[in-house]
Length: 93
Length: 464
Image 1 (cartoon, chains in turn red, cyan):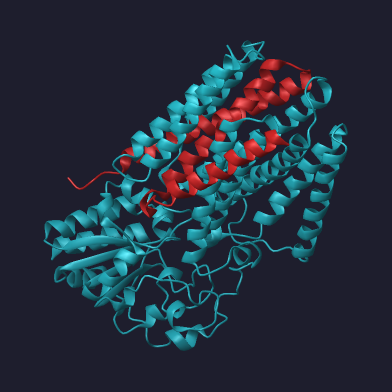
Image 2 (cartoon, helix red, strand yellow):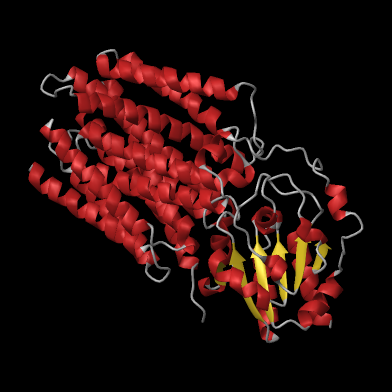
């Protein structure tokens, strides 16, 4: 139970930090914000790598393999496409 | 490598995510912010590979390469006009990964003696499977709609509310079953299957102009699914990163709902957008009051204009008119006219859609005004050009107490001295109601496809 309370504390604080940081993003950048934050949600890759690396059973390895592929598409695609968009946002010359 | 060092690396990664998002808040630093977050991700991945539990690297390497290759190709080949479907698709992959990771973790927990099957693990696994599967399938449906693989308009099945409620109840009940009997692994996959159906059925009835809400919400879900997976694995960094994304999606969802003056349940379950066109006294509003203008007439109007405001909508994306619009802006500016853009929060199919298209066409971001910035300026605007927008400039939203868009904040284009509406016909927008703006005394209808209209207009301007 103590473990859960600790980890839940982190969850609540992180949500508050998220609201604080993201409410400042201007409407012009809402699409890059979505694709960029989306790339961050690919963080499940960490769990995917552990499942695949442990090789507990064939089934978990297969699930882990697919999960690594999915999460990596999310991560690489997300960061790259965000960069592509943000490169285009220019100031008045 | 010791667990403490890996955890410190995870802390650094989490801090980099927060720092990166903070930098994303300004156009000048946004690109660096994205890079900072990417470095955080790299650190997280590298240190996970150093974990003692990881025994075999070959398969991981292959999977990383396949995922990176697909991600790179998608990111580099997608057209800017197709960005909403790209974001939807990426959301889906994140949700799908959460389902798979939580499933694998449950199998491991049940099978490995020294890993306790705690209540936290089982509840979080059920949540991961449910949210992740809804995200994955909901996103795929959103993708298919935006890509027009399935019709973009709402598809309403009879009795859908009762069916979805029942489905949701059964899914949650089976989720509780996972908590009570975690060793029954088939329960998990049953929850995933039912949640998949739920994801499809809840997104199918939503379409068109409501897509920005759906995409924002799915964005939030993909974060929450990651967060739930963090609780499954007892991993702080997953929880922090997932919460950040969840919060971001929720904020965007709120902004989108507010910009339509509708509640989230109304957007999700209202089935708006299926009103039969021409059903609400269209002829009375338009009869004999529509003034059509040619390119030459609009050019003459612009010739004498000092301040021009352009109001883009989804139609601009459809006709790929953003580059032509840019050329028109340059032409007008070379003639001494001031030009700016007024962008409604829900213009397009996702938050910020118009801004990305205009940025692609080299329009500087200072020229893209928000609704709050633009509205006080319309009274001093000589010509407002509406291109591909409809409901977001409909005065009925302001003037009528009831109706599908009543109370929705709009761009007050009707306050400009003259309004030019570039549109192919008088067909209604997504809300299915007529637009009195088209019949207003100071409005000229310039009937044509968006891109062609702008090109003809430029030629006419040059010929003056």
